[in-house]
Image (cartoon, rainbow, N blue to C red; front, side):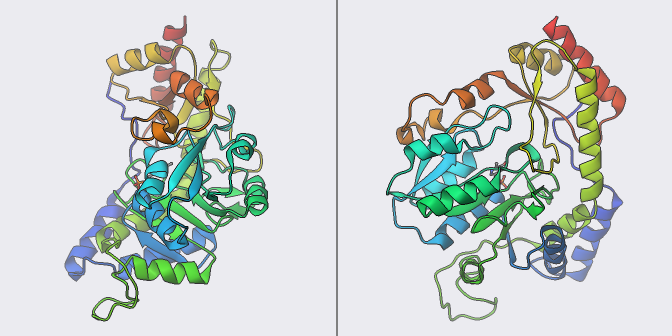
Length: 362
Ligand SMILES: *Cc1c(COP(=O)(O)O)cnc(C)c1O
């Protein structure tokens, strides 16, 4: 059997051509492609105030800096997320406080959040995991009630709307990642989205050495270099044109998985929240046969991934743990496995993967 990667970017000659023009133009820093890429993102998201960032992790960090929360303020973060959500909070001099997630949608559990919110809590970071949106109307209500800023980790939800509004726009700031395994990619890269003009201007200075334009040496604000290259943007721009196709392909791949694995053992698929669009990030399933499935697929050269290891159990984050067990997050790690869903897969590939999965359950 041929090797199947866990992720695979949807590339063709377009990316090569665009990269080639960047080189021949001899302009490698933020330039024409960056401008076009941002304009493309504006069309997808429906908001003008978008800035590029080197990657999602630094995008989240920069956004938290821009919010200027008092040092050591608490930020509510779901325990079921990628490490960077929590680490951006730590790097910004703030304290992550972890809450559990919903067992079906894997999204932040606001009932749990209600129990741990305190006078020190100043922000909440909903994470749109696996290509769907958190119920942002509920998050909005919670945030208004407790006077919290909302920063959306939208690393995995580019192209995904909740009740007709793009993720990243409900909160004060939203961050999308374009790392190699994200919905669309530029290798490394991200964008920061906000509807707030002041925050936009602040981030614009913070990301570019404290000045609105390069080439001047009076720096009105603090700032460092959080820019991207035009090479990244050239790739990103061609990727934007493929978003519709990626959306269709991933949804039809997921459908095939659901067909081939229907009523197989205890297998459960991730289910997006009601009101959310879905561009499946992985074919995310939970089953007590996780280990066996991962071992067997590895033997057959199919790359899998486990789910996230809970933040409240991470060696360097355990000190922030507040509540007792977060059973859902722990259970998801124990049972969760991601199967590949990228655009390179054929129906036969998926059928073969499912045959191996079924063998493990029998
Ligand atoms: C990928 C990811 C990030 C970090 O983005 P990078 O671009 O890899 O730095 C943060 N949060 C989540 C949920 C992610 O999936």
